[in-house]
Length: 125
Image 1 (spheres, rainbow, N blue to C red):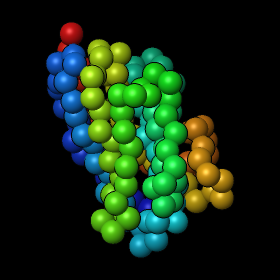
Image 2: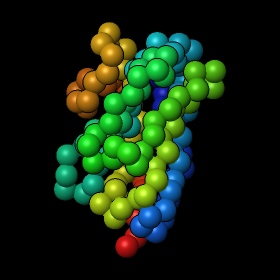
Image 3: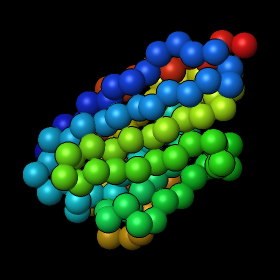
Image 4: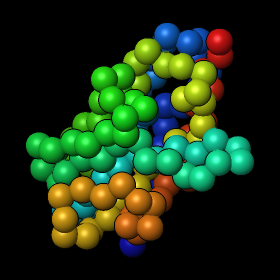
């Protein structure tokens, strides 16, 4: 069982930045692919970014490419997403997730086994 706890959400003006963190309880954190998803009211959960076990490979949704950066610190059992140039359409609850599947990366929510409780990000125009 892996417990994930997100932090760092809040209210920010358009064009601003936020950094989300996700702390994991897993003793073998480095064996998990990690990802961020987001969900707005009335919409399905949407892939944002994912990072490989070592952190050497990342993959982003087109909607955030060039603005968001995912990273991880395996010594601290933590994954981050730095969000710059935020837009009102980035407003959502952001979720951290992990999977032990054996590929390089996955973008479907169904591929991820563990989820955090989510943190709200609100971008005002």
